[in-house]
Length: 165
Image 1 (spheres, helix red, strand yellow):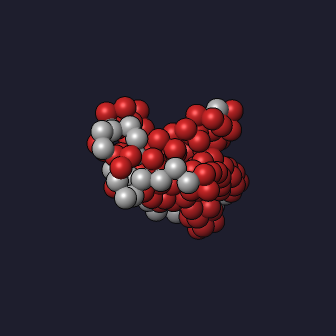
Image 2 (image 1 turned 45 degrees about the vertical axis):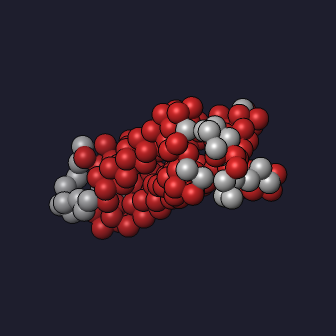
Image 3 (image 1 turned 60 degrees about the horizontal axis):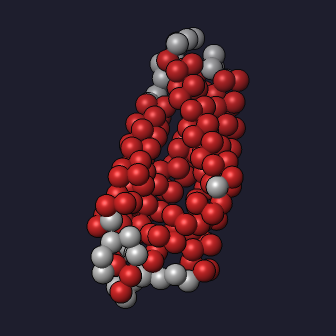
């Protein structure tokens, strides 16, 4: 039973990546706008005059492309890992090895959320100062990061090799 739960949780991380990337592509202007708001630092008083603020189109485009690209990468790795886990769910050692792709997918998602939103947006571009962006963006990123990290920890726990559940 625990193996099935782990597989289902990996599938939810894949779904997060797929749904998120689709949303980023469908609302491309919103995706670029969110990155531009973070990099320009214009959502809080005095931010736009900071030496760190930038509206450079290349920087904005690079950030906007990386977000759905890393979500898709995470989703594909989790889908491949979840499928491998499903195929080997009755073979202990093989199941442990099959987790690698799924855990890599979770790791890519955690990298995106931590590096992209917490290190770059929140710390470098000081988005924590923005009332408009703090809750909807940073709080969500932190919530996703926490959930995906917990899923990765749970999935990464070694399973009893004798178990067939």
